Length: 159
Image 1 (tube, rainbow, N blue to C red):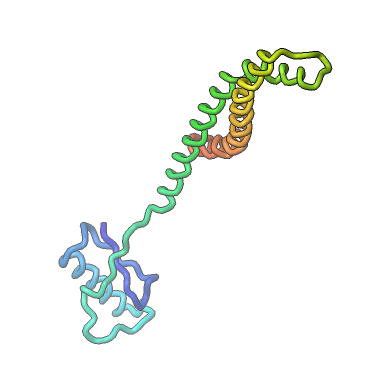
Image 2 (image 1 turned 135 degrees about the vertical axis):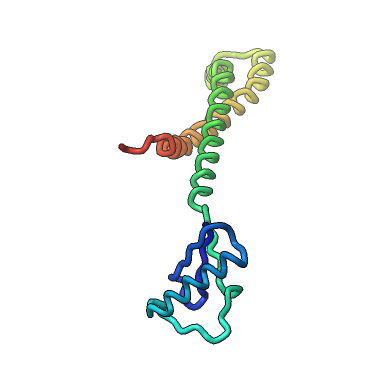
């Protein structure tokens, strides 16, 4: 099915079976002439108006595309959340041990050079964990919306 309209009256849609062709345009012109004869065409067409001046109406599926883009983005957000969660879990235990060791810096107890060296090496683990944890918390907030998008897309139509 192909559809045509007029530049002068875009609200008029002429539907013809098949695809855009000279024959389809002639059939649309026949429908247009019938509308003119019945007085249903709101505008006057100038002499010399022909089938080549009909404008083919293309169906746009932008709504579907944007919905599909939203679903793709939602899945990416959730995948990122899963990756961050694993990263946080893997480094948590070691980071918490380093965090406990930080308290030694604030005590009056004497420390060895070896303990300080180990602590300094542990700061990298602590920093990486803290940064990953912050990114995880931010991703989790975004993932709530992503989950809602997917839930809406997965919902079956009411019967």
